[in-house]
Length: 78
Image (cartoon, rainbow, N blue to C red):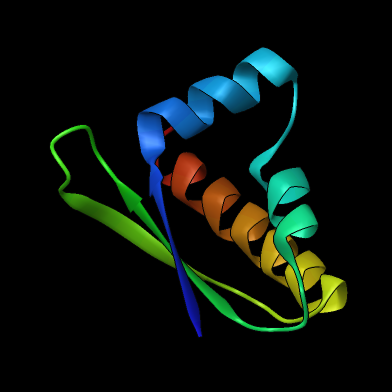
């Protein structure tokens, strides 16, 4: 399994500048092999991990699950 390390702040700023979502980028990274994506802060502290699936179908399912969980978390704060 490949490991991809990403500086979170730079990654999300670049997405914002290019008008892309992280899911668009993840879709481009799919190559038939699972990949561990590790996000770091500017001090190299690990923030979170994401296991990029092997297929676009699995990625779409992850996106749906993430959206649902995110909406539930936001609702808890309101």
